[in-house]
Picture 1: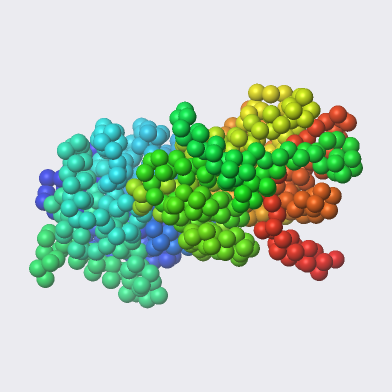
Picture 2: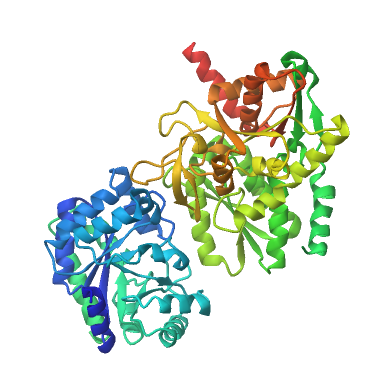
Length: 267
Length: 360
């Protein structure tokens, strides 16, 4: 069983959700990014979602898109992302999920890519523009391919995601791209419960988790929360003071840790 | 097929757009080139291009689906204007996304859209052209699909858009077939059309796919074949996935999408309709490209010889016709899809000529 699957099953049993952090690989620069990742682990992050910059990141909102474009302007690509993942693997204990749009992966050749990803120590994969119907191209390599659902997903799509028996299902909490404001609380809860009834798979809630408050709000409804734009904002705010940045990230994640235990509002 | 819908669309195409559009024999040009050159005058449609065929069709479709708002991406602004127009006549809201660079070089169309009541949103990210405008339009659509329809302007994007747009644009080819038969009692020997995303070309080619007619798609060769200097996707691209379709793409060896260049904002797109990629692969359609310079020459020549100022996009097809004419047998009859009129490009051409003057 993969470490991701094991972790998610563990958190499914627990009341508190796992913390998953999305960070763009190699930015602001390679060493600082690695320091940020170590800080995430120190702050209690359970799983790392490592993004690969792409020229046309359709699923991403303004903040993450800025990181994509910074990356592509520096010539970053999937190959560099894989090398970096390998380095991260040797520097921390969090399981790594690689996030990449499909074209770079297609261009490398799915077969070659999956083998290299495996060799780099990557355990999971999120490809936001690969529809559920096509996800089978990622199967059979011993890497967890993570299906995504949205509040607008039909029962049929929910069923399709459930049938994959993935390590977890990534439930997008917004109608829209990353970093957008969430739907009304009750609507998200209803949606998570709908998926919960259809699938025994652990669930992760992402897009629009803008800080400790939503983590606390949804802690009883999901098995993990994914934090991306919130982290990206911290990086943008503190990247000019590279010595302060890791510390800020660690602090922020410790707060998220309190929130997932239901202790945030009470402070 | 829904006959009521078809009747409504036909009504608008006839009385609002002004269809059918003429098939015009260019007498002076034909005499000089020694072959018969016909223009399918899509430039005479209301709003000045073929784009209105599709926008009216999709806007009516959107209304049937209960949508109240249209979202569009635009390069040269022709599709944006055509969408804003359809929204106005049908009483719908409209938001158009346009690259900052394109807004600058197509100011007139920006103002036209605003007058038609559309909100024009500037996209100053990435390449600041059609590709990033399309990204933004998709992002809007993901959030607003419950009450909005994304009105894609070309035969690109996820299924079923390439087919929807093709079907609405096929009216061009159907008319040509009928008109040409009435004029010459046969089929044309060649049909030429420019290809960016590929909607006007698909529209004129589609009804001829099973006929013995040579079909030629003309891409924008820009300033040369180096990456970033052109948008000849079919000529120089590779297989890839963008905007929900598997087609040919201009990309680097790592699968990053390349910047493109064309003198015509409407062709400035690194992808192409998947059906064009298919027609290229099975060899049914020949795809070629001409440079900015050849396009400008054709633009000027058509204006001087026939009193018709073509859109820079369409001038690409004219340019290739001029290029191939000397090698054709005397009985050849060429149909060029004159997909749009050139008023919007006057400034751009002026700038180009001014720059060329400086170089000389």
